[in-house]
Length: 163
Image (cartoon, rainbow, N blue to C red; front, side, top):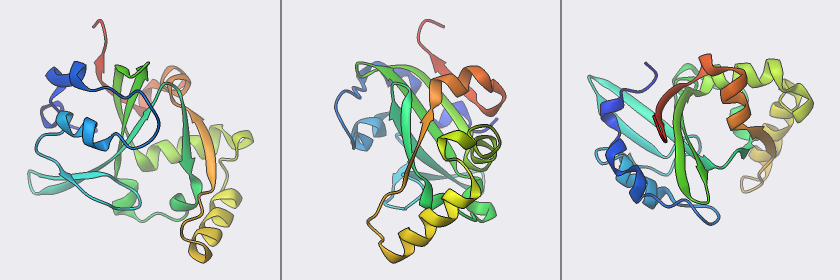
């Protein structure tokens, strides 16, 4: 299991409204009652669980998600272990909550989505620019719902509306 279900308050999923642009971590926090909100480049929340620090990056989109590729060049082991919590929604209402390990997800993108810009050269160039211009974002697209269908082995689905 990539993320124990008991670390999320799935019962409150209908209280979260993801409509609108950007932010929304404050709204998502009700699903993560025991997590600490952090301001880190690769993750949004962390928690101590059974002697291990778990970190998650929250991605909230209907399908198309943009990743700042410059952040993902030459990640260390700890960063590769970050979980990505995907909140896939329609008009702000969460339909699917899925989690993937960042390292496995990136490896899959680098192997299967090269034409979208997921390759080592783009990550390296993005990283170089990020070091020189820290506020610059070097975005590459990901259609999360499609990948969930194409590569379900990358994900643990923690919630699906109607299940």
